[in-house]
Amino acid sequence: MKRVLGCLLVLLLAAPVLAALDVARLEEIATREVIPEVQMAAGLALVDYYTANKTEAELMDLVANGATEAIRTAAEMALSRLWIGAGKSFEELIDIVYNRDESSLLRLAAVDALLEYLIEKEDSTLETIYREGPTPEARYAGAKAYFHKNRGKFDRESLEAICQDDQYTDGYRKAAAELLAGHYLFPPANAKTQAELEDQAQLGASEYLRYAASLALSTLLIKSDITKEELLKKLVSFYLNPGPLSEEYKYAYVRALAARWAAGL
Image 1 (tube, rainbow, N blue to C red):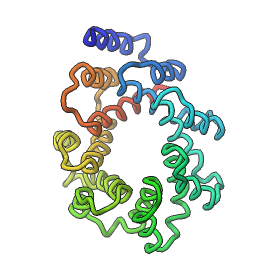
Image 2 (image 1 turned 120 degrees about the horizontal axis):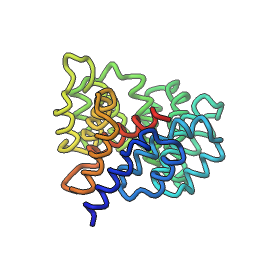
Image 3 (image 1 turned 45 degrees about the vertical axis):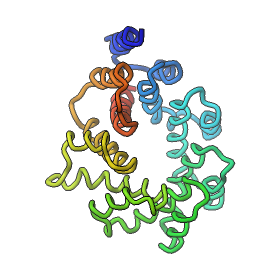
Image 4 (image 1 turned 90 degrees about the vertical axis):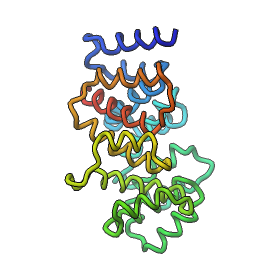
């Protein structure tokens, strides 16, 4: 039954009449689709549209009450963009990020806007935040600002070591992984191949090494000539053949399909 359902979904979603999905169709997929990865891809494809067309209040409501994780995540990412440069004070943003009673998605939405203030702070202040911040998002914000200011001090090897060392906090390792993803792509002469990134996204020794590879892999997939139909079939294959696939590996293909669908809006 699962295999039949998956094949029907591929045929339906890849049909020529739906080659260019509109917002309503993407919202339907993001709300009702039974394959989690396809559902999330549809949600991520809506981020640009939500940023341009929804108000802060509408996005905050969707972050809190969206019907699915895909819709809530799309709203979080759109709200994050909306808040950048929007004039929210440091106090407003830090209160959100530090508040354990807020949803993790709302805290995450405030991180990038908060960076505008954090990058002006002393390194010692940022170190305190990424080590002792009361929420994962606070620790991530402090680390992200720290690496932004000090990125020239870290090479691929040092970042990989951080990603594998559990003496560092979750936020510090996540921010290190995001910087590491760039090292996997540049300079081109030393870039990892797609095969190497696929292998690491699957089998990396820590979730943060897998995350770094996933981010780099999704960039390669987006820049490649792989079609949205091929990406969709790949995601459906994950559902039909649920082997020991890492979430990070699957997410690279989710992001790539989302980019293809978003480009068609």
